[in-house]
Amino acid sequence: MCRISIAIIIIYCWYLTTGSSFKTLAFTFIMGASTIGKVVAETAIVLWDELQPLHMQRPTKYIFNDIANDFYHIWKFSNVIGAIDENMFGYNILNI
Image (cartoon, rainbow, N blue to C red):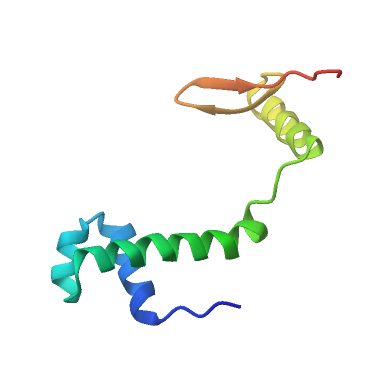
């Protein structure tokens, strides 16, 4: 279990919610801009390493099939696993 100080979490959340530049955050939190950059980068890595296995497991062919079936039942498009801005993303079953 990793330990991150509350101040670092506040800086990271402030960065994500406001989209402020490192220079602005440095002025706000009375730190150097390069320090803010390191805090943001390191916090992102730690959060990804800790949360990715719990919330974003590697999809299997069964998960993709379930997604495609749900997409078909809702939208009536077969072999589609998602859509972004009216562009559909499909998949083909390859026999290798």
